[in-house]
Image (cartoon, rainbow, N blue to C red; front, side, top):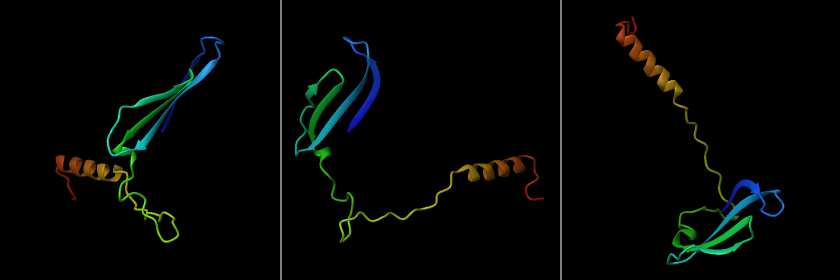
Length: 100
């Protein structure tokens, strides 16, 4: 995982230096402490071994060709229609004019 931070002035040249944090999550049966592998003033590299670095049994099913099957797109509304319908319903029942 790579995280990019804002630039900051270098202590020697005063040029903007972009910050980068790289986390290498490794697969292991037991969790270990994160280990700082390197830091060059702009890029920090950390390795961390944990069971979370391993894939899960249900991750990325593939077909015979080794390609990930496309998921079926499901149409989902934004909820604004339901809000508007509820608003009109409550407004009309408050004034006693429901469907009259």
